[in-house]
Image (cartoon, rainbow, N blue to C red; front, side, top):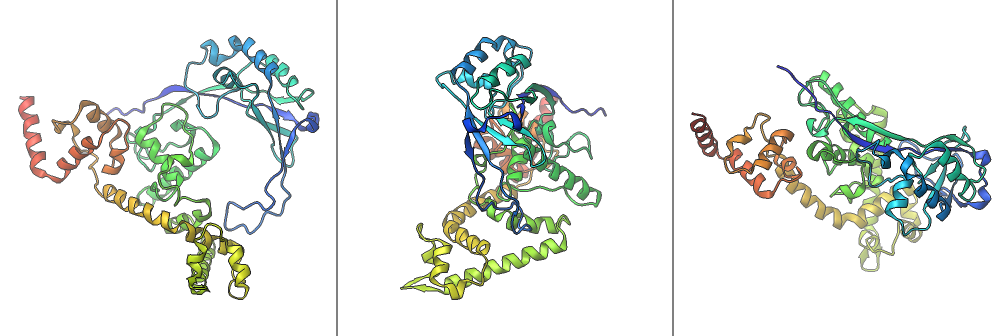
Length: 431
């Protein structure tokens, strides 16, 4: 049997240039210092001792805009040389000038590439314009009049495979053992690519050990939202992950990422015993701090109810009860504060999660015959047959699918008599 993967060629983007830091006049820009106490991404990192490097802000102006408008006929995305879709949320400077013609300037961030390089990333001025136009353009921007361009901006067009051909563990449906991750799936951004690489790599390793692939649910991780959006809805433009895409984002906070995902990673063998033990120690400390706070009294109010008030912080509570709370690090105290303040919202979202879980439990067989549901709309039949949802929850999120379509599938799943009747009608029609 011949098997194939569908390919498209319809995504594009323009890339940003790099400038030589030594040739920038920072006196004409606005400094943007880093955080005074930056928070590490990993709970395994206690502190970031290196001094923060600042960024700077400058702006385009009407002269820059006039130059761009005069040279639009030389930009590949405006000449028709590139016809594919680009990201709406990260437009090129050409797009900004055309689409937001009422703006007399656009903000640019000058971001150092690192401590050991002089390259500065110019965020906000991605472009596909020719090199000579870029040379003129930077000369018109305050602070960049004498800036040396180390790398020019450029346009890129790339092929991708529609990701609704993938299972939620990023294995292709048509070729067993073949996993796709990154820009190949129609995404843009380093974090999005890295997240998919983690899922695909873990899934491949787990399959070699005879286990199921890695599936993270939408209430467990932004990675789960990202992958579910891709494999369920596909893409019609370069996909980037935003917090607004997650319906349970109150539960998907930066501060509780380790508590959400470390147990899953440990169960799958992706987290070392040392890391897991440190996680256990942290969670036990949080529970201990929570019990101590609940035992405190402020008048006739318990400490946890007092901490729920908008104006009250862990720091204030600590100042009121230093003998009871000094044993806990600030990181632990902040976890207790966040958990306490968000408790009501989280409990409401948990009800939604449990409702979604009931839909997730309604599994759809991989070989389910949607053609047998006579009353199902043709569009729904085609989309179900293409995406092959694994459960009713995923089925309901397919673009263009209505609740009545899902209800019909549920009726046929739960009623053997309907399935048998539909099969008889199909066979009679074939005769």
